[in-house]
Each structure stands twice: as structure tokens, then as C-alpha cells.
Length: 293
Image (tube, rainbow, N blue to C red; front, side, top):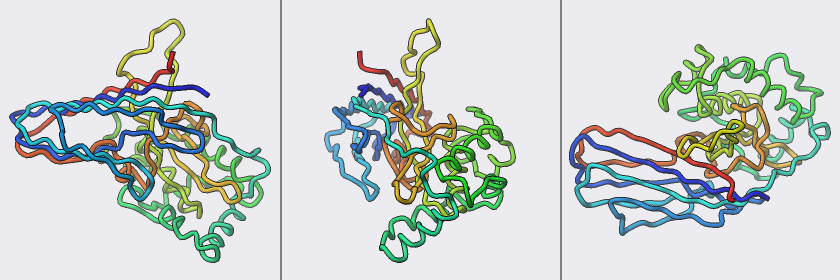
């Protein structure tokens, strides 16, 4: 049961003085069956005396604050300590095939009143149900392959089709462009897989968080070199929600730290807000994820 420490440092630098700021943060790791947030601290400068928090519809913790003094730089640093265990999954061969799973999902919504699953089946602004995304599952056996094995096969197709390229996209790049260029980052691949899965009749959610990675052999862990990560969570009938990381072609493990869950990136963005004055601004982010010594 590893204990992991995360430091997330955000800096806004303005071209001129900003007279006020109103911000919403989603940086605190969730408490879940395989994860416990042992400690969470926020350092904000200039100081924010009205910092408050509340839990949103999806069970994520949101922090809100305002700054009412002139400033040209604002820094937000979160410190988290999380205890994480590996997710427990059934053997892939005993899960239902996709065709049967679709029927079970429809039954759960129609007859069991699990209406919350509906929101993870439909298109959103960031996850349009593009026909080209649905065809990524073409050639996979939906009638006989157990669902977890089918997900693994789909993940391998993703890794063979798309290339990780941190310079290829930004937060506003549409999925249609990712499909054309076959390049993107974890946010793009997560949105794309969501579009594909939802068109197969599987409820699928967006997950934001952190990924514990190991530095190359003999090299030190670089402070601030990590970043936030994203992956999908898929509703598997008779099992529950199962997390899969399309960027790394693997099911989520003890190194995946969950911060927020939602329908797409807009539900889970780590920082969001507005400034009064200041002209344009630049944003710098540094993340460090390391096991506790």
C-alpha cells in the first residue's frame, strides 16, 4: 500500500496589474475504495482569506477563493499525501461480452432506475459522438470476447493508431483534428476513447489525476517535471466501474491517483476562473509525484 506525495505548483503571470481574481480549483485527490487522501494543503499568494470548499455532483472536492488586491503574479501550490492500493478486478475471462453488456446497461437504466448511467452515454461539447471514433472498435469481436479482454484489445489498437505528442494539440483542439493527425496527449486520447465507448453502448467517464512514474535508471526524480494525467472509467455490468489508461495501454493501478471524475475535461479542470485587469497572462505548471520515503 504505497503512500504518494504530490506537489502541484501553478503560476499566473500578468502583463500588468490585476486588481482581482476569482478562482475554482479541483486539485484534492478523492477518497475511494482503493485510495485515501491522508492530507491536503493549499498555499495561495497573494493570500485568499475567503477560501472555501464543497463537494460537487460527481463527488469531487472543489475549492473557491477570490483575491481583492492588486497583483501581477498569483501562485497556487497544493500538497497532497495519498495512500493508494491496486484496483481489484475480476479475471478478464469471466466478464460478459460487449453485446451482453450493452443489454445489461439498458436493463440497469430502464428497469433498475440507474439513471445516472445515462449521462455517461451521451455526447458532450468536448466528446462529440463522431462516427470515425466508433469505427476504432471495428474488427473486434463484440459477441464472444469477454468485456475486459475487449477493452484491452481496443487499447492496443489505440496505441498502434495514435502517437503521444505534447506539441500536437492544446486544450481547445477538437477531436476531429486528433482523428486526422493521429497525434495528441492524454486528454485527447481520453476524450477519443470516451467517444468510441459511448457509441458501443458503454457508460464511460473522464478521470483526471496524477501518475506515479519512475525516473530512468541512475537518474534522479526531476522536481516539477510531471504533469496531470487523464484516463477513462468504464461501467462493466456485474463488476462496476473499471479504470483504463489509453495513453499507456493499461488498466489503472496503484500509481494512478484519482483527483476528479466527470463527463469530460470541463467537469474536472484543475483550475478555472477570471481576472479583473492584468491584460494577458501566461500560465506555468509544475507537478512532482513521488513515493514517500
